[in-house]
Length: 110
Image (tube, rainbow, N blue to C red; front, side):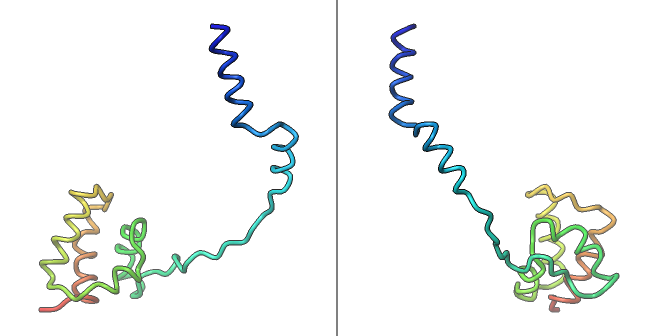
């Protein structure tokens, strides 16, 4: 037991910096400002966009969804169902139809 503690102590001494060096490194840390991409953009449309804003922005940006190709309403319905079943998206069942309607109107085709 003593031998393993000694070996562990030697290994730690070789790997870890000394306490004064570590303190000096920590003292050198500085705050930085980071600009993140515009992630607070919401889907346009006022109240009609509330269901998609309330359910979909947790995982998707509005820009990502709105840059998708136009699909028929049935395809958008299948995509929303896939989010619920395959990815366990916590979409309120009452919001499914309004989300599909919004996507069909905004990014749909017949």
